[in-house]
Length: 249
Image 1 (tube, helix red, strand yellow):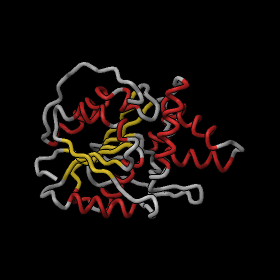
Image 2 (cartoon, rainbow, N blue to C red; image 1 turned 90 degrees about the vertical axis):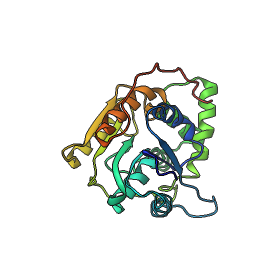
Image 3 (cartoon, rainbow, N blue to C red; image 1 turned 135 degrees about the horizontal axis):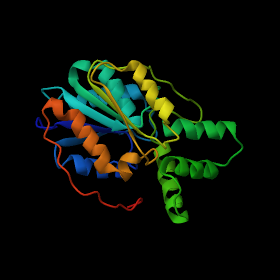
């Protein structure tokens, strides 16, 4: 890890990284961004605690506190790390992370499998609609395959065990972002964070974009993040034109 890194983006899923790239490409024009991904073998157990330990090994190379950011379960890892090692985190940005951080899309998938007499394929199809909105048949099929592979990498939930994480805030400045039409981390779940906010914390909702709003609207999300980071001596926010993107490229 280079010592000139401004922001470390936390990811837990190789297959979902494609949905982070538009935002990271936008941010990289103005700040130095590094990516860290939680890796584990499919025949090994995975957990948030293990992910936090591995992230600590990675960040031990930095001589100063870093700005952490992440989406979904990646955000839950960043949050857990910030609580355990507050002296190593300068600020925290969470995207699509509920006030109960374990309420990821994986939880909604497994709850449907447990509660309803629906096939795995039917539940995955429902999840695509909830996460991305209505898509064409071919795009839906591709996204179902991506989500199925992602389930194998979840550090939180399985069909046999649904986890919870501690609720509460953090000591460093925090920004929480979501989408007004996200049915996974809906507006009430997002605004429940306000009970934990301290002066300087910030909540922002994208008008639309569902659960992966940062993929569909990278510039708008990036501008909000850059504005939040400005007091921490990062580079000034500049404007660029949004780019249309193919969902499954």
